[in-house]
Image 1 (tube, rainbow, N blue to C red):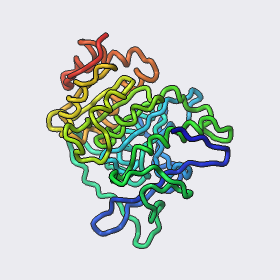
Image 2: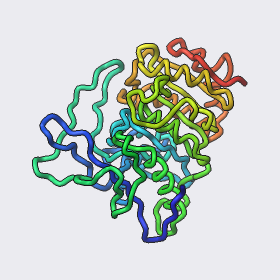
Image 3: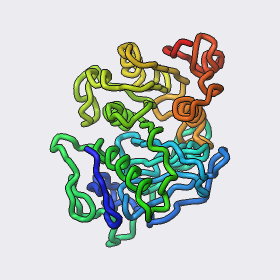
Image 4: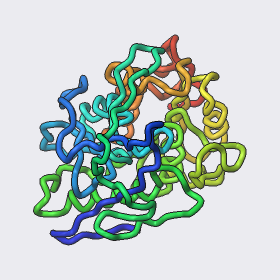
Length: 337
């Protein structure tokens, strides 16, 4: 259901802090405003941002917003985490190519940049003892300001699909509101959803929303066994509700989600589907410099699907597609010309 806002209304989704470190302290939450320096190899160096009126989400966009309205991407994190900075390297890179991104989760801690196939070793900082954190003491199902987020007692992931809807409704409102700095800066006819692992399951479910034009599913796929490791209520039946082209990207046979993705792609007959993989495992390349190959393929797919870039489409189309000819990649499914 879409929400409409007056000039003074705001939308904020605040969820419970479900993950704590061994010492019992809760992860820090970044203050409102820009987070970190601009980054990305695109024409528009991008920043992360925390906003008071969308506190339980994290925004990524060009530091200098261009005059041309930007397509929108809604992002779900691995593990359905409520850390909206968990994929910050990747998301700043994608945003720098001219995209406005809303990730689920508070802006908490950023991953360390790592070399290909290296393991991330940085431990997230914690709040000082006794420090008050945004969202502390609020329960699942609560929204900042006293509203109620649709909740399911059986859904125990740290973020929920309803946040994707709220992010999209917020963007629609800000794009229309005369007092908003984002008025007219977003192209709400060009919207994508994407996510990693558990966030990929959220994305599959949310792909049924008629405002979504395309989907990207990273290291994820619907479980063949009901329930799986996530509380996201998604089944193979939900694949029939995907109504736009969809790309599955996996880490290959060592990626535990690879069989699920392969099964999904084999079942989808009603819309174009791409499935390609690199042998990098379930973690992908999100934390590699500029997001590695995962960021590159994301930009190619979005440029093709949301911007109509014919050259970008050549990476995916036909037996001689760009990724088909790249010896590092294995393409299992792709749209025909």
